Image 1 (tube, rainbow, N blue to C red):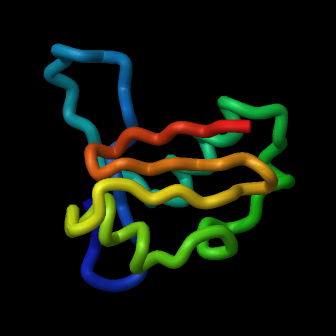
Image 2: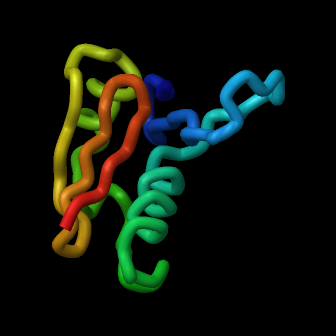
Length: 92
């Protein structure tokens, strides 16, 4: 999910399958940073803004427009892959 200009938004993956709770889109930078922090030993101060690591248009093509299936980029030495369905994986 994204806006047409500026910030790219996406839904945070939740482990509440079957829940009727309303979920609000969040800035992709926040969602991706949290995924990186959860999967690594990095601290929030170690990570710069998302635009330091990936072009917003490339990210929008994946999570907004769906014209690209996935995107992989490096965040402080860790490979981050974002897929069109909003999944985020962080590798070594």
